[in-house]
Image 1 (cartoon, one colour):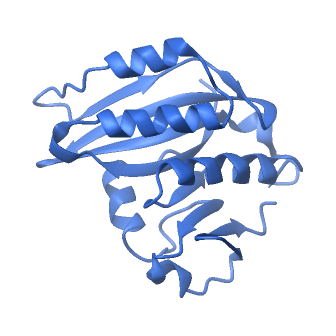
Image 2 (tube, one colour):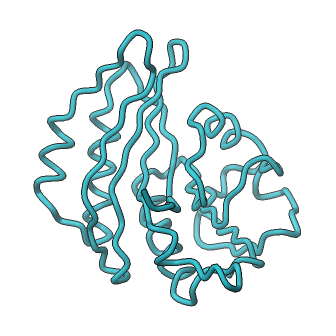
Length: 194
């Protein structure tokens, strides 16, 4: 199995009903140029059922192309239960070897714009939540904790789209990231990787 990077956001599922999250995710996919009706129908028919002893469920589809690049992405949603809280991690997976140059330990020249464009579209569909581009899939509970607090050295990401209203992020200084203000959000990118 190849290594993946992912663009992701975390959503709390209210009343164990993920329908609005599914519709926001479908809207996001359409905005980035993925118009596969099979994905939309399968997602709308997806039943969120957790086993008593296994608090994880996922929804994954085949590779798709976006309007931003010839680099394929994989629509992927994972769902977690922690005590009585339910979470959805809305993601796109991207094969790392397609976007990262291992010889120089940097992303390829087209990657930054590609990831920023898709991340901004995801932010527009999930307005209140930060969006992160990471080189590994983070644990959902840890994501929720870290996304609600300041960025710390334990949470690794290469690009983040942060709502301006998250003042705990906007006032934090971190020399690892380049910060760019855009409309009602700002973009943080790890300048060493691009």
